[in-house]
Amino acid sequence: MEKLEINHSLSAKLGNSQDECEDAIYCRSKDGNVYVVRAAIADGATTSIFSKEWANLLAKQFTQDSSTSIASLKANVETSAETWHKHIDSLSLPWHATAKAQQGAFASLLGVELRAKGSVGQWKAIAVGDSCLFHIRNNKILFSFPITRAELLTNNPTLLSSKLSANNEAWQAVQFAKGRWQPEDQLLLATDGLSDWIIRQSENGLEPWKILANRDKENFPKWADEQRLAGKIKNDDLAFLLIKTRTR
Image 1 (cartoon, rainbow, N blue to C red):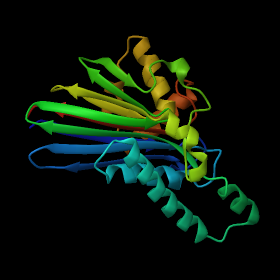
Image 2 (cartoon, rainbow, N blue to C red):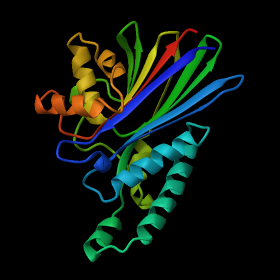
Image 3 (spheres, rainbow, N blue to C red):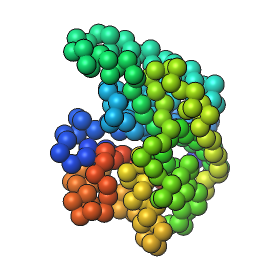
Image 4 (tube, helix red, strand yellow):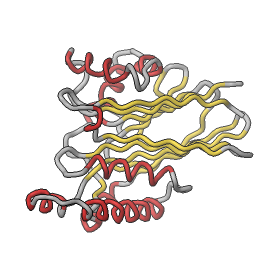
């Protein structure tokens, strides 16, 4: 079986504390005859209220499931929405916050399942919105999903809502992908602000995943702030999760 190395971190936009970051990362692994890793990354929309909580619920719920089907996604969204609404109902909110909450929270979601048996591996992914997966081989992006070019990252992606009646467009926008990995491949998940930087760096012949491989929860926020101040990365919440496959 391959040895998997997993690294991840978050960084709140300039001017915000880490606790205010509205991106979310969850990862869960299960050992056995087949080694399974389920990872998810979500980006809460700043324009909606309690989007941090919504993003965390979506990402966590995906990792606790065992499927990447749209039926499973719908069930996970319903479960997450129920938990979100219970949380909101337990709060004493001013009238304007209550009115905003009635409109729902919104977030992107990218879920990835990786399976390994011996030296054979495959992955499946499901996405709504603009959080991205990059399959890297021989220090090149082999596959990018669901965004392939930086100019395709817009300010109005389709997102999942905690208001279930608002998800009709989202169900039409669900995308799927799958592939096989080899030893020394890398799978990189990133929210849109960092995905934009990754794609542009790669288009310029650079290898940004090498930089992220050396970042952790302690030094990533400082590095991200330096890049924002230098104008190299948008002033947005950032999150990444990097999975490396190594031979034992």
